[in-house]
Image 1 (cartoon, rainbow, N blue to C red):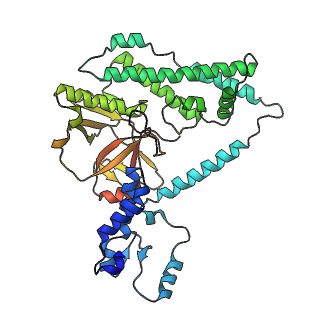
Image 2 (image 1 turned 135 degrees about the vertical axis):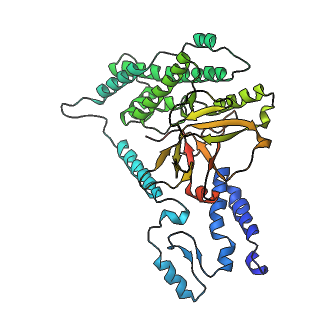
Image 3 (image 1 turned 90 degrees about the horizontal axis):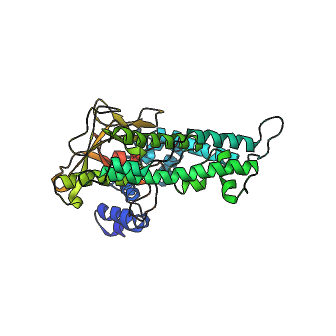
Length: 406
């Protein structure tokens, strides 16, 4: 109707109908809707109507064919590559590698499900292997955090919300490590026949046998897509980070990926600023500045916090231009240097040429709303300097990740 009844096609109305109503209305995630609108802008735009030739990709393979007989359109369709290149969706060539890796991992996961539970010949039985693995993991685990000692050293202060953040994090990690420790001890006893092998312990046994995190751990854990070995190493690194915080005092640079509940840490940073300058916390937002240093800083910032540990997917950080740049071939991720998270009054922020990059805890990029109103995966938007239009990076699927999958 819009195309036939109007002299000039109302493109804005069409984009709104597609991206916000008919199809966009079914999209519940605001980041997905932003991508949908960005992709639509490639195909529903004035260039297609006004120009004889409109390119959909930089290589020139995909374009809007000129007006002609029916056969010319068929000929054009036959000339398209059998396997579409990532560029037609606005993605980098590295997206093909990511897709292939995902397919391979799914294939191996299916193969692992058929793995026999009995071993033949003179090798170790699966029970002996699991008993050794459980003992090895237990030997690496530090003791529980002593909350009474921590509360004495880091009391609740009006001027320092990070003390409260630290205590809450330690409670969560104690809860997780208690479950891990108890299941591993009981698993060793069950293998020896000292206790009954319950369905829960059997699930732990089967998951550990194929290198997966048991469901009983995941229920008490922070979001993670890592296999068992990497998960245990990551958990131990997080525990070491908080132990160092307890022993040496509040760090100059926070490992943002190490927090169980990242949003509470960011709220603590906003709260410190709001209380220092007596501003309502609802008026406080964040600005972001990527520093030249990679791992450590000599001192704490006057306001806000320094954070490290973020990875860029879909792009890289150009350390010469100090802005987003195209990924190098075959390099899927890049580390972001230390970033200064600067709180301030949102009304005083100046608009800049930036890309609003979503920050996720895992590469799954999906989550559910918890009882606190926060997503279990999405953390926040970060403004990153860019020399390209924001649409370019949206189509690239550029995001910041707190942790990788391996």
